[in-house]
Image (spheres, rainbow, N blue to C red):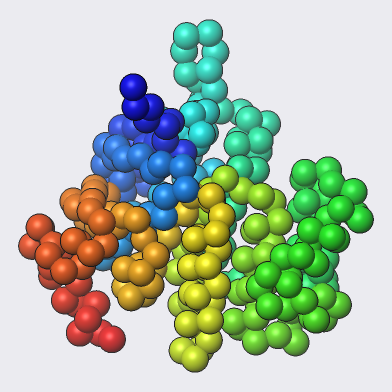
Length: 261
Ligand SMILES: Nc1ncnc2c1ncn2[C@@H]1O[C@H](COP(=O)(O)OP(=O)(O)OP(=O)(O)O)[C@@H](O)[C@H]1O
């Protein structure tokens, strides 16, 4: 008998409103463990809101999000689900990492300390364990010789590599990527994308990625979800979605991206 694994991420009837503005409209989707899913769609279609909900930076208005089968936004109380309290949210958040457009490194700490800080203070690793982990990760991202420098001495691409190492140091089950190359000089983009592609191929981390880099999305994604007005209007493997989109809105969007580049 075949066994379908529990999705790593599940959105079940998720609604997000800001005032009267319905930003996510009864959203249902799942992401399997280890899958790389890219979210595309016009500005304002709700992509970043999805990542912010997963980071618990926002709360759902309705519906349930689960990560690894555990409700993120809610807690089980007997047979019922009740909104999560801060302690539950903090525990759930540990399973999820995020890399932002603007690196968000601590400017006054060395590169090494940027990476050891959360494993020591959030996961409770000893400083020696955290440092060993950080040094391994800095090797992985090609910055093994820059441990003691401050982020301001690094290029944007190198800073983003530190941010990637920092996210990996928490050993997340899910890694969220939000336009991670948008703030980089064009010549630095490919190196960061190659690194992320390698990490995606060689780890079992589940990725949700918002990007305008359609070449990258096409290369690394298992699935691409096209959003429009807070709904998924098309969900397909990249080779299909990019070459033969079913929905006219997807076609228009891809054409507009092509025209801009
Ligand atoms: N904190 C907030 N308060 C009010 N409205 C918000 C807030 N955050 C997002 N929105 C609105 O939610 C909608 C979706 O925004 P979101 O950032 O998720 O879109 P997006 O698809 O990621 O867009 P982009 O590609 O431009 O980043 C937009 O209409 C936006 O104005």
